[in-house]
Image: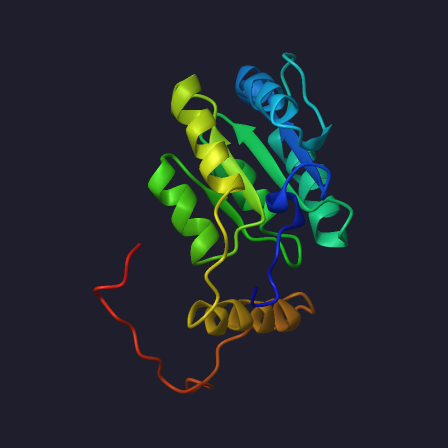
Length: 184
């Protein structure tokens, strides 16, 4: 829908999910891999282990695979999820979102077509974390008026990945109607 499908959301065997963490997210990554296995998802463990590590290495492994189309999506875990998201969002086409609850997991998929889920291994417990993963994996992108925003993000990337600044003088699209009563 809207040019932003995530094949792995369509069921087991449809695409591969790359999963990475630093040492702060190692235990949470184990829970996630158990969940993915028990639900039939195809996944690849991109590291790390329990040894001290730097999150940018693992964010780059996952985000690079998503950016190149080698992975349908990714899940990254560090202490807060924030560092992973900062590093992952440096890659073209990546929409990495830090999520700490099921509601945000649903909205980041429905409105932003998030393709990498970033989690804090020190932020939530096992059951909430797995609820977030399940919600993110099973929520579709809404498209509609959200597509205009994603198109602008893609335009920003095209300009900024070539070392230029993107800051249009005027809004290059017509205003859209937003219904504040819309179900979120």
